[in-house]
Length: 140
Ligand code: AMP
Image (cartoon, rainbow, N blue to C red; front, side, top):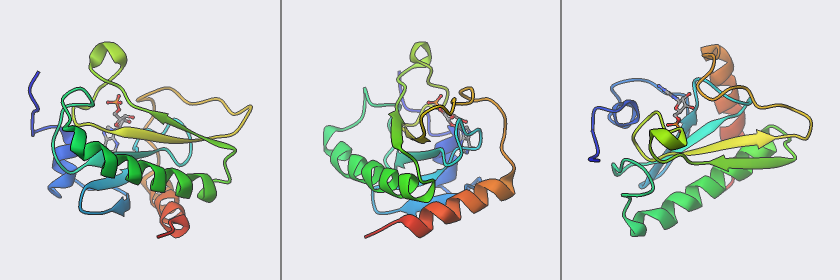
């Protein structure tokens, strides 16, 4: 399957639709998931287009994982989480719904259930607040 540059994350990267930005560098962008499975649910994407992990250039993965780690540390701190779940889906059969490579970063606390994948849209004001909390917890 080929990469389709009309996917929603490509549009976010081009600034055609908004996002609640958490972090950006030369290689990656992180922003709040609009249908969070947990408060603080953040997505980390590469700037270079690939459909998912299966067609990504290996050389892109190091910098991308460094961003996932950076954002995960900030998410854990911002939400005082006990752990962080990283999810990454490849192709519809595996649950992928947006076809631009992305990693889900989910703060986890024992005994708190995750909400459904692509469930309810969150209040934009709440997402803005959560993005600010995570940005505030980023370290260099
Ligand atoms: P996946 O099923 O792994 O492809 O995940 C796609 C994720 O993108 C889901 O968790 C959606 O809630 C999320 N999502 C879809 N549209 C947007 C958007 N415009 N901004 C932020 N997150 C989105």
